[in-house]
Image (cartoon, rainbow, N blue to C red):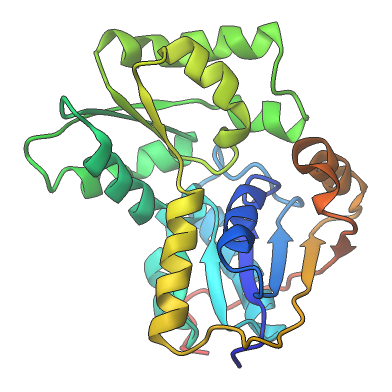
Length: 275
């Protein structure tokens, strides 16, 4: 089991930032990544649909023999994290908790901003976790077009800057000193986001901290790949074509992703039982 791959799931290409952080920290580990491009973006969809799509992909990863699940999607984490931890026997790591912990330790004035999809912000997941510290003031903003920019491969256009100014100006004017990028697509837009927020605002993304959680879980369960492991990185996408996923991966990550294969996910019984 220790030499089995880590399963990573996102609605599209955003979770590749998490995959890269895991590879940087754990170069001997094999990865199996699925981008649910057939249903992307998740942000504007009803939470029940997101829950169903996400569990279908996680079922597919477990059926392919992964030793751990990483939900590299904030919207999915908010929609079905408890379901996933009850449904599967393998450990499950998500991206919200690590970002919250980092934001709490980073802020100097106690004013934390959170940006994400409409689904993530509407779920209240970040607000609930940060709200346990009564000294913090939490301000949020949904940024519905950001994922679309990333999925179109646009990271530096005037239209993107205009959208960033519209979404982020209220948080900047409110005096937040720490901004949580509550979507794994958003690190690809750090240039525009940092430009609008200014150099005095710290940006927190969950990729590195999530990789830290993965490391801790593997060590505690004696699941680290052995010293002679020959790691493989396999990338899969749902839908009818992998061409768009591969094109975007090359634009955003270079040639790190060399090939993408299609995978079919099936209907599930949502209540389910532990697998």
